[in-house]
Image: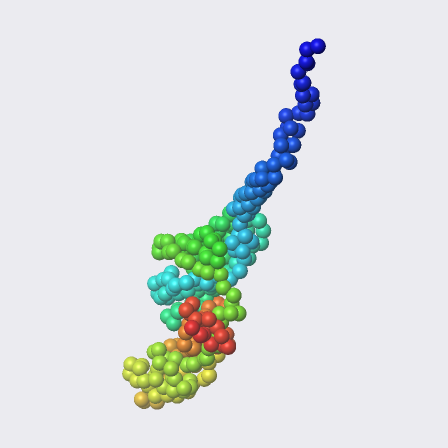
Length: 282
């Protein structure tokens, strides 16, 4: 009787099942496949996180709220000399910015402030109008980049002036100054000495008659008398002024705009120093 060839029973499993069995029976292939799947999943997750971070900037980078100080002095108005600016901004809505701007910080310029109007933001950009009350069309616009605010001041009759400001913490930057009386950029011990110097420069020179201590605005009343005894110079607002003298490493800070000198916490470190123990240290 002829022999019937042996035939292996047909495998009823699907191709996928057969492939999975081979993988399970081959340890190295299984480990390689699992590792590849893990790397692929991690790469996909990392890419998703990166795209999300790029699409959503950090809260600190996206908000204009805070206090900003210009890095360098700029001449906004020729008759006032170089000035620093300090901006106090607050976001009042999705696209609105309110606040104030302060000019000063220069020995040649009186500190003053003004509110801003029509403050608008769009993404990282901002624009607002300066309400300085001088009748001129003045505004600023710019863009935020982390702790840096890059602005351009648009000034009528002056053109555009580029300004770079950084976000600051006022309490970490302000230090105490001292108040002193000045005439012709010279410091005097008291109001009588300062007024005597002022009267000596009159044409013709006059003798001292009286003086009064500085008022709330820093003005000193000086009065003189002519050689024949007739009344002479007699003014409250004159070149004798109470001013703030700042310690080394600092400059006059921007006040609240009233014009009154502020010796206490009236100075700010010049950017190369930090406030430590009430002084500016390198």
